[in-house]
Image 1 (tube, rainbow, N blue to C red):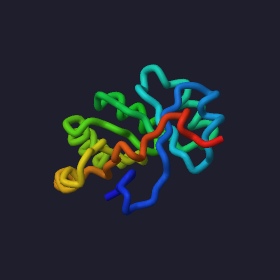
Image 2: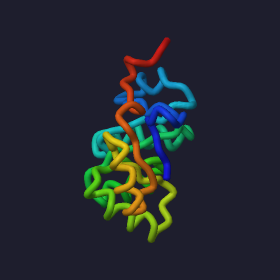
Image 3: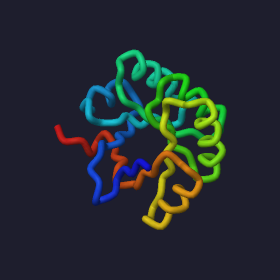
Length: 133
């Protein structure tokens, strides 16, 4: 299971981006977080075309299918949607990993029981304005 944003585990920052200018402020180690897919489709294509690591928040299975087809490294979904998305991702061998936003360590076990690819704590997600120049 992937775990991002926990104090015990080092990992990349997931940086919320809303424009090409925002993307230019990030490093290659950052995961660009696009949300939601329906308004960030051009940014997703830019990330794909430039081999940039990116994640997309989704609200539906259809959005998850499109995010995977666009080459998203990660798909962030709410717990309820993630259970269904993960089943389809496993069946169709998605390249994207499914992540659920969690707020406590207790939730890790729940996600593990549903074979969700990983969890992300809020500490892993930052705004572009929080990046150091």
